[in-house]
Length: 260
Length: 311
Image 1 (cartoon, rainbow over the protein chains, first blue to last red):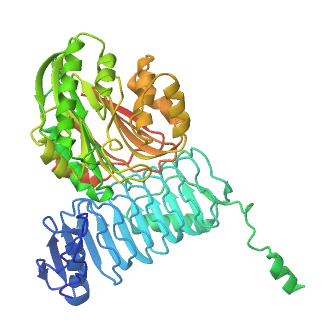
Image 2 (image 1 turned 90 degrees about the horizontal axis):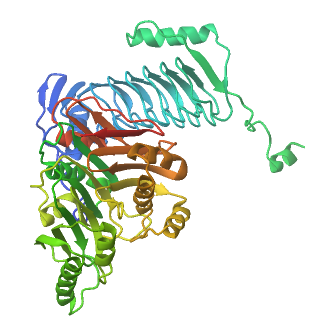
Image 3 (image 1 turned 180 degrees about the horizontal axis):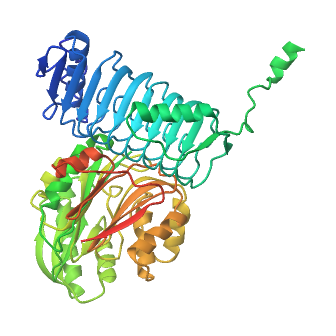
């Protein structure tokens, strides 16, 4: 995989034409360090893939990501990736397997559609954190923006700070643990799944109701806090789907005929 | 999509290279909108006024008399200003289709601006003791090069990288918008206003002029109207959250303050760094990183946020 270049013409000056792998990382057995300061987004990702897929590296540290977008996207192997700095939009989206540590903040849509793996963000996250998450754990130690876990279909999102408006909008499965306050419209139009909130809630969204706390909830929350070394969890309340808008068990008119 | 950026130095009138800072921020967000780039820059307040004027569209129809017409417009503008008693200092025409006039004037500024805009094809982009608005087609480095902005020394600035959605790609529809005829107030906006026509008609009835079809212009005029009625910048911005419908994040600057407002859905992005010496904000963190090299903590303000910083 020396080159993935295909575009040759770019009238608006927005495409990165050069997709050659720079091969400048310092590789030490299964570990590698990449200084990304002078590299373009495309080259950073090409280098990361080259390290993980072709050089047998299992632990990569990326220095100076400088809040660039779309870094570490689509990595489908078990490995450890550490970013020493902030990521922009769409950081580590579409991944399946990696354990990612981000020592900075992230922009919009971090870990979007993650299938499995762990993403730990040391600082704040923008909106849409863990959008359409399918599995794995996303841990944000600061605050998150709006629409956290929109369309979430599995996995766990753990936020130590506050969350913005429409958190867990259209959530379908999985769990969210928000230790701080939640903005207006919490769990709006959720289908299923569980939201735990520690702080104040500005308002509940449509068809989101408070649920009954069980021992399984205590076990889950304590286990997640233990895994990530976050101390003892705060007092939490549980919210689930009220299922008043829930019509999936009803048959369509055409189907009803078939049954009869 | 559009990218917006703002920067204000908080060391009370200190001189900084805000032109160069803003170019770096906007260039880093070129992917959000490469159609046009705009700057609202503030230099330390001086005795005289600076007026930026657009004479023609950069991509408009350029017939055989184009150059001759520009020359006529220039002399018309100067003679009209003199007839109202303005004392013209320096006239700069670095770019063919634009003009910058430095002058002193004791009379009514709205009357002067109206009279200058009455020259055919002319639009007053900005007028004030410290505000200078520069906007043109192309990315930030192109515009900064054409207008020599890298050497601009001042206190604060906002900028805009535009991706045209609802109106044309030309200078008239480029941001920032000056809050005509309110000196030294400018606005950049990322989003869409859904009750634009309503507000435009309302404001036109009270005598305001609109130069473009862009929904963002209504924010500048709205704020100008509110502030003319005695609201502070912050009050006017707070009131705009209820009055304006749609999704938006906008920045507003005055002679000594920089403000930001976010709609009640929090649908448009904004990343903020608030330091003791400097406040920088942009649609994306990547822009802030271009002007602040040290490790900083940034965050996304929440829905309905209105914040104002003074220098």
